[in-house]
Length: 146
Image (cartoon, rainbow, N blue to C red; front, side, top):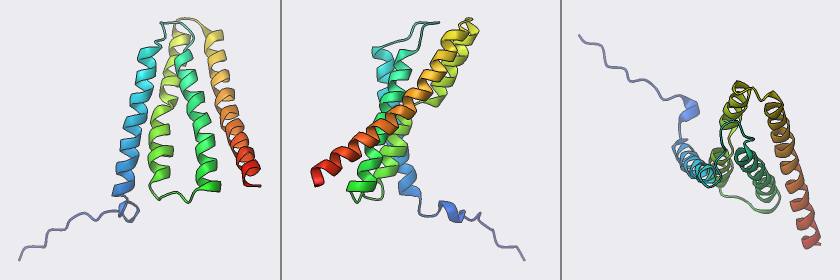
C-alpha cells in the first residue's frame, strides 16, 4: 500500500498574509520607481557627493514622520494602509542599500572625507527629519483641535 502524499504545510506565520505581502510589494515597486526617477533627474557623477540619495532618504524620513503621526493620532487607518504606504512606498523610496554602495564607491575612489561626511549627514538628516516632522505635525494637529 502506498503512503499518502504529504503536502508541505504553510507556516502559520504566512497564513492570511497574502494581501499584506501584495500591498507591500506594490507599494515598494512604486516607491522604488520614484527613487529611480529622482536618480535619473538628478544623477550623481562618479566620485561626487551623492546629493540625490541623501535628499531622497531625508525626504522619505520626513514623510514617515508625518505619516506615523497621522495614522497613530488622527486616522483609524485601514489595515493595509500602513503596509502599503509606510513599509511599501516609503520603504521602496528610501534606500539603505544605495547609501551603502555609494559610501563604498567614495572609499574606492579615495574620498574618505566625503564618504564619512555622507554617512554622518545621512544619519543625522534622516533622524532629524523624522523627529522634526513628527513633532511639527503633532503640534499643528493639537493646535487645530483645540
